[in-house]
Image (cartoon, rainbow, N blue to C red; front, top):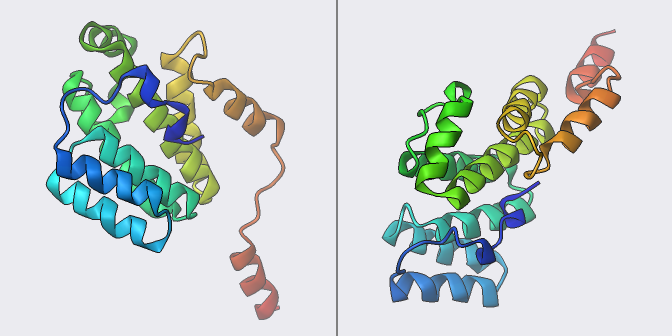
Length: 178
């Protein structure tokens, strides 16, 4: 469900990386803990569109259960990658012709974009924004007919679990008023 499913072996970290940025990422990984965020934020300040930095920061937030921050990074990954492969600025506007055009630039960048879109959808589901999360997952499924990104499973889970969703904080308030 997160961007870790798209690993470095798939070559989405294109180009040379500033040595200082690389060292900050390495330090954050070696000393994983509260100080990692600060190191990754320093790397982000030096290289705001570097995919290694963005994916590292996404992973940090995801594993710390800071889903709002992870979601913001997923959106940022989509913006950076989308610009490189000439995707529309809004994920809702992406059509199959955009995917085909994007593949002409970079297969791996298209995959990373779709993984980021899937990650954003999943995070929205986790945060209780079911309709928007579902829409994002549906977009990935529509653009990935062979399900190489693996979003169909999420969609089938949503389809097979159609019980009424109760926001417990709202339910408690209603019970307190009764």
